[in-house]
Image 1: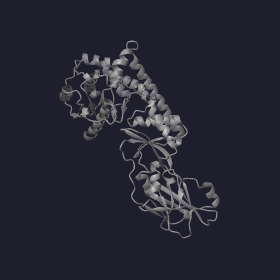
Image 2: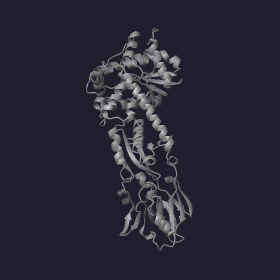
Image 3: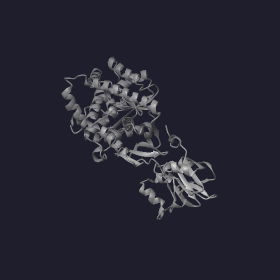
Image 4: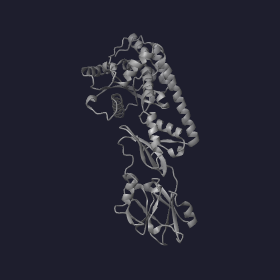
Length: 485
């Protein structure tokens, strides 16, 4: 594409200033332009051609997704963008996806198409070494997004609108209105294609754009700028809450190999803070933190059960889970396996002192105690008390097939006890069992899952017990066990 000299400087300068103010591009990056054939995309392509030297962009490529929903029109758009990339001397990464004959797993077409598109963008970035990808969302798109979220029941995070930059995706036209974009295109003689589906009222965004905003824009012509400013205020407010929370409670949200992880136990009694943290984590995971979703999750969070799925969709799962004996909330992708079962592990207790259970990420202290100490602390889930004969052989290991524990009425399979607690395979493999003279003396489930511990009948402490051992979990931070960014 030959770039004309008569560039509308105010528009170009506005985009350039927005890029610099938000640090979207710092220089040297390889940039993938995600383009449709529409006006916003063609404006972005033209602007980056004129700003490439000033922004010190390393290289540029073009991505286009054929949604295969509009017959010949979809294929014509594909060829239009391919030809534009060719004229600009840019590599073209074209993809097609048959949305008409694919199930979106309960998601709307708009949501499903967005998820597929961003997934493809990430794959292309990884394969071809693009540092950033740019989409052509504009000021009006941002207003539509905020209004759509409002009608769906958003909280404060939804008011922030479309982020200028997140997860390697930048939106350089977000400060520009549709009218400014059209003026720029006409002034520079740039051709674009119209998408006939933009008039289809079955799509929620089209309803907002063509019905709601058409009804208010004459009375409130600066609505998009006003919503943009509201988003800025919402952003500042949430950043302030994050700073205050960090100063009061320390770091509360971590990105671990489990997923986005909230140290919920630190703010158990502060529903407002939990709501804030949950909404933030859901948004960062690519979900929409509606008020109803947050309310549903927090209602379940109050359950006595230490491990529970709080919310589940086709995109992500929110789960309450004990980590190192403390309550956490995990937000992970649907279908992701967050913990794999551990192989068999076993450690010998050679005497009093510390025993490090490396496989389970636990340290246990072993010492003698009095009956009075037992009476005061026997309900503590971080302590296990047993009465054992001097010289007994003691080990700590995870479960084996056939393990049983002695009860008042006989014996019971450890497997059945774990099933009753609804533990998954990974949780079962982490629970330490105290083994005395080759028999299960105690289930130390309080050390990993938050349940009360259970001692076998034959080693339970009584006032007549001559030698009492207490096995106590030594506290440590969960980020030493799970990989954390």
